[in-house]
Length: 125
Image (cartoon, rainbow, N blue to C red; front, side, top):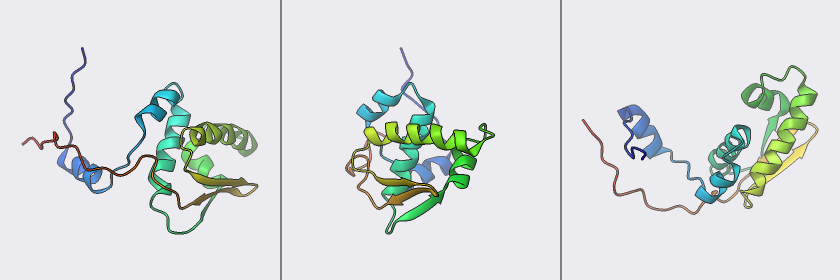
């Protein structure tokens, strides 16, 4: 029913190959109906595994990245805090603190264990 082929530019393919972001398929299935939670989960999966020290992210920076449609920062904080809780529920190894200044991302294990790349990927001319 679905075409299982995707055509990627060489640049995008190389970026994916060089900087993969493994995500848990069961986690994605659980949060698939919320694009905000999916965004937060993928962001955490990308950021947390590469950290070597705790990294604070301000509410202003989070607001700019995840919620520019919210005019009031207070409303964004409330919504994003709930979104983050849902993303963390499917990423139990994530180490994240929330405080009045924003979030503190801490070095964490990947969302899924590292594995070898798919053998079936081939680059088309």
